[in-house]
Length: 235
Figure (tube, rainbow, N blue to C red):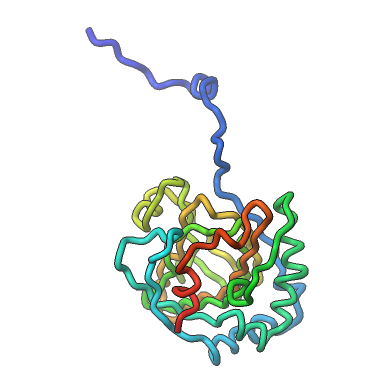
């Protein structure tokens, strides 16, 4: 008679278990919307209405996690426009926001050498728009949300648990989804976790978020992959 192996008890499983060497994806969120001056979000949304431009993104760089030859339409206000039209945002990026991000790491965080690399205001609208799947090259990413998101609206941040995930389908196979709220400021390190923004689900839905990039002595700006700037900032 063949011996049947019984499932291990929880205690037996933990007796053999070791914590992973790579930390699970984690983030820190600050609810800053209520402490910023009144009208900060409407000013940025108006700026997006006036200055946002569209272009096609092709995943040609090493940090992309998309199938070959895909093209994704992106709408954004670049960092140069943001500094010109909302200088207070650039000051926060290099000041208080950097201080908040620095609480998550023992290293000093560095701002970028160009304002376009520093800041962007990204827009997604209804009808299935999404943001490309990728890993980050920078050790600290900041996201300041101007709008509420939910399962109904879509636009959630989808993050792979498996560091080997190489495209949207592989991310979706084992992932977590974050639905931020207006005024929340997220910081995280996603160099080892592929992530993307899921498609918008409601025709009238809007996702507006300011992205911020920081580097560090152990992960300097020079690691930024070739071709990324051309795909993000081209018109």
